[in-house]
Length: 403
Image (cartoon, rainbow, N blue to C red; front, side, top):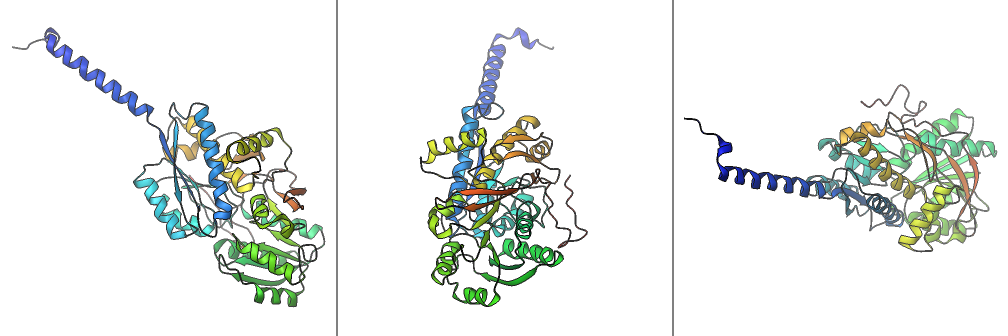
């Protein structure tokens, strides 16, 4: 005999309780925060640059939460310290993905840290949003490269130097991936453009003794130095150059990792008159930039300054949230595909958009530091520049195609 389940009042009650429990569990799950990783150097030689990037990423997360979160859920940042050590970045990236179950990670600065993290993100099919200018020569579906490619920072700086008549260029950098590859690209273009590489020297990341380097600079008689030193090595370099009678007012320096916070921390008088190339300066005159600066100062201090990597970290979080909304999903693969389909947006740094190669379309600027540690913008590209991960002179025949 087959009995009707609906005829059994006790079954109906049990089913009602079970359904209610499932509904409550679903609601609880939907209300759970979305964990995102924030991985920057909070200690070590790179902390001078990376702590503020962490702050900007947190600010963007707070703004997203204030507007309702993503997919109806608030964001929960899980902050880790890469400690200026590539191996630590790799370990912390794996922890964030495996233990903390983050859906994406924002962070990194040095190319050594990025390259240490890359296999982790590829192995676990997660997505890193990398906010700093770099040497290109890399193309991965598991990284969104918002920082400048070489054709968006170092080569525009070379174009500016040519326009100014500088012909003898000395290349100085920290001894790791970005400076060496950036200078490889620069050398190809310097020679191609009929200019002269006056010298090329490297010091260990965090190195402070520039006596031998300065001797070689004196002997080489350059007209300008292209500086790819990173972190607090810059403090020692500029101090020792000034002590030997070669401040920026006498021997121009074009830097690629000194921005407003570093200038303030080093002492503006030390670097006044030197140049830098970035895709953002605090002095950009637009309403969104003014709003961003005001929000950052309200959160992190009225005297705070902001810079290019901070802004890239900030817009990375906002674009990720927009891509999540477009995809209707937190899945990293769906999000990265949605991110490159988003239309160009007006941002604090001007019009930006992720290209199909997962690098950012953006404008290049050259500025000169004043005595207050702010940049006077001297030059900008005529339009936002399409990113080129592989320089045609340095890496002929190589292309970046991401599917």
